[in-house]
Length: 411
Image 1: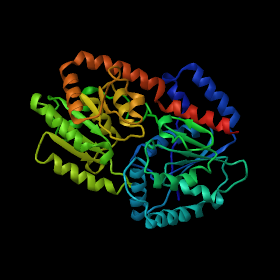
Image 2: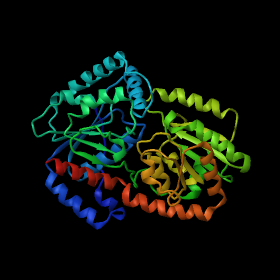
Image 3: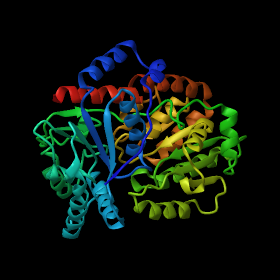
Image 4: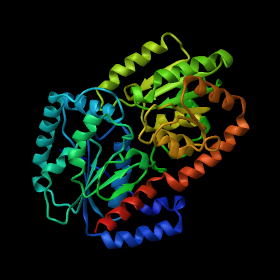
């Protein structure tokens, strides 16, 4: 494993986004826990919601004076192929658990466990299935608390894969899920807590950007800023349904010929399947020059994502399964109307007809896009309600407070 280097963020900088009561509670819990050492462990440093959250959460903990380390697992392509299969199967994809998959998974768990010999933490937070097996090599005294944090939709998992993972997660002192529906009824886990993912309002991706600057930025990628733009920002993954987004756009195009579509994605190191699905998406787009498909390899950074979310008339997140979908909160925070798949954590963020729309089919998605394109006053009303919901529930300061509460509870 490798320790990820991060900076420090000052909690005082986030005061404009916080209620006074929350700030007081953070101060009290920080004083009670200030001498505790904490480790965060996940599979990748960049590309994906977990890494993005940790790039803000870890510096915030450090800014409060905590000794917190972030460890990134070592893995090669064979490991990430297996863990991507785990991800898909835990979200409901059919298929048998193969002996070779188990063998590969355990091999890399053992390799990474060698780095734990020098660990001396009070709390160890393990994110998602990739490092879950490290619990079998736990070090430290009796007081060390191990916590498993699940970021994916495990409401209807492939049973073989869930049973394999369950043999590890049942050993944890606590587990965190995004919502109650993700916890199996027959799962006898200790100290289940619910914490939603969150966005950082002061990160480069989410700081306010003037509309004109956003338009100048997206125009560099061939977008005509004088015509309406709809955008989906997510990994190229079957669960994100970029092919369905293209089909919805084609239906809209018949009635609203000036519309453009952008599909913007980050290629993550722990997602080798992403390249295959990117090529499938490119083939589906064909020679339609009003469809723009771009990745971090085309110069997309957090700043460009911010620009696309700010310049777009509508943000789409048409997921079929979704742990949370940070891009929904990001879009709402920027005052852009959002249409999301009726799946997982998206349902926590979008209140139907109030903060956005929830859809299940291509036809529904196209219908709602047309509704918002034709009714700008309705779109503006939704965005005001959506931004306030994000401020109250889905900012990084809320996640910070919820982790502090959990650590204090476990003591």
